[in-house]
Image (tube, helix red, strand yellow):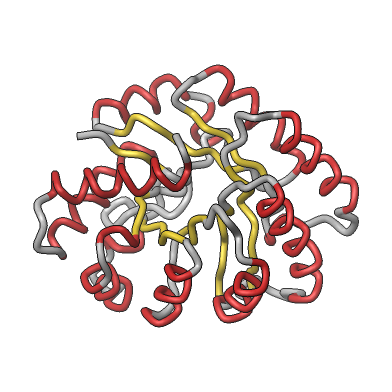
Length: 255
C-alpha cells in the first residue's frame, strides 16, 4: 500500500531536526511521497534544500495569507523567477485566503493571492490553497482565472456545495486529521457522499494533530490513520481507497 502526504511542512523545526527518523517512520506506514509547501519567502530556500536532499520530497512555494509582509512585490518577483528556473517545483502554494485570523485584511490578501494564481496559470502548476471562512470569495476568483492544472484545497472545511464547485474547477479536497474527530460530522458526511476521485490525503505536519494526539506534534506517518478513518466511513476496502488516493495525487501533482 503506497500513500502520498500531499501537504506536510517538513522544513519546520518541530520535525526537520529528525527528518531521517520522520521519513523512515512514514515509509514504514506506507507513505512514500511528500509534498512540502513553502509559506513565506524566508523558508523557500530551506524547502528547496531539504527536497534536494531527499528525492521523495517535492517542493511547492507560495506566500501564505497568515504570513504576509507589508511589501510583497519583491517576493512575487522572486517566486516568478523560481518557477521559471526551478523545474522541480510541482505547485504554487501554500497560498490562499484566511478570514479566520484576527484583523484579517481581505483586500490585501487578495492583492497577494491574485498574482500567485496568475503564476500558477502561466506555468501550468497546481495551486495548493489555504482557505478559511473564505470559500465563496476564493471560488469567485477561481471561476474567473480557470487554472489549467487545478489544485488542492488543503484541509477542506467548507460545505458540500462548495466542495462540488471546487471539483468542477479541477480541484481535489485535502483530507487530513480533521476527519478523525467524531464531532466533524459535516466533513465526515462529505467524505462519505462524494466520489473517491474528489480527495487526496494529507497531514499538515507538524500541525493539525489527529484525534487521540491532541497537543502533540503531527507526523506524515499518520496519513495511514486518516486512511483508516475514511475506510470506516465508506463502503470500499481500505486498499481500494488507498489506490484511488494515490492515483488522485499522482495525476494532479504529476509525481
